[in-house]
Length: 395
Image (tube, rainbow, N blue to C red; front, top):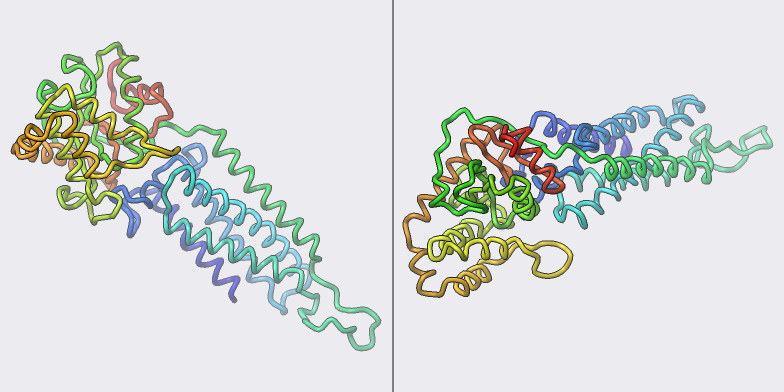
């Protein structure tokens, strides 16, 4: 009953995540760019950008659930043996996959999804129970190892200890194949795209924060948050894409804080984006106070401070950098300029017009009426996204 219940729980969790992958939208308790959303929106949530790993998990847990229905004492010994063998292979695969995805969330993605972790912990608990119980099962399901009456032999075990570990190892090998496929098969660089049905506000590239030349014939709107790790990764590719376009491309920097205090399209506040609204205003204040200082501030906000993983700058550090670049008096005056609030609301309106089926993720690129949430590997991928998903003309 315990094995059946855990299998049903794992199936329910993985099936829900599979449904989310197929239909989109926001997972309950996730959204607004929080860690859960970062994990489910990453390339590691699928194999090659096509097959959701949650779908594979749902299949494994469904097989576990079915097998658990055939391990009771009333089932014939050959059927029980087959069921236990299948469960051992399955839990090996589930445990190996759980370890792989925990490693990914800890050291690659840098965020944890509570639904994923609940599924992984369920799988690890199932693994321990199955490997513990399988070698104890006897042909008559008796726990008494004394010889049967009128016979000279003890009840035969359904499966031995060594074969049990061997079958679980086969499952671990299958999990290793999954990990190799995820690493080796590069998914499509685009994972969400769409078209706005509303007329988006027009931006004058000569009066808004820009990466690139304001005279570039192609200006792509970049919706971002200074505390978003995916935004940081994309930001490092902007200059490379501009070079590939020979200076004919520029990016209009439109902050879209993932915080409901200033962005009504975000369903709830999360700790990771607590200062997003204020950080956006600090960046815009630098632009007003001294335009040539904005690229320096912008790159600093997305640069590595220490260690091997990017961490967002604090509000205090951002203000100190802004004062260093433009001076205290100019910064204070610029921060009080009503243009900041107007431009921020314009950016948020563009963001809101591109929110579809609960997709609140950033970064988001907008060109004309088309938008896309990109996940490029390099500047070359970014250029392909611009041309393929946003219909940007070739240079």
